[in-house]
Amino acid sequence: MITPKFTVEQTDEHVIVEIDVPSARLEDADVEFSENLFIFSCKPYYLRLHFTNAIRSIDQEKDISKVISFDLEKSLIKIQMTKNVFGEEFGNFNDLKKLLNPSTITDVTELGGGLFNADGEAVEEFLKQELPTDDEKACESNEVIKKYGYGFAFKKHGELGTFKDELNDLFDIAKFIENFEIDKRSEFAHDLDLGKFDPQYFL
Image (cartoon, helix red, strand yellow):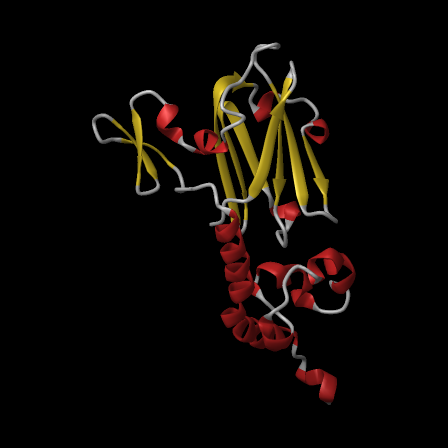
């Protein structure tokens, strides 16, 4: 999974996270937050943030449309969370690595992608993540193209995602194209053809 580019800011009442997820299907995004923890996942991206102060649970929000908003053209998702205590100043917003690092949690250590307490018992399974550098972001972009690319020599990615709703009327794989692995497409197309083949059509 890829740690996406993101920004985080706060007001007296809210914590706002904006995530850049190029080529992802934002309608498949999963967002969870409660107390000090925020988790976002949308293949191939994953983001987990550990706040110094508590936020209201997503289940406590009455109008999700005011909490989560999308900019499909820019591949951005914005999440506005409510602070448990208005006016509290959350820390580490100027050091994103500390927001990613769960070591601030008392008596918990991250090891091999999981969280464990002092007795070695699993607290909760989390994916390991690191804040990418600019070079790593470029490498990740290349990795995405290598795995999900299309077009001439499979060097394109992201262009069709903008028009997936229109293209879905033309071919069935359109809604999957941005996140469908290259080496699985032939088998999928074969199964799709078999499923739609009607021998009565040729009689």
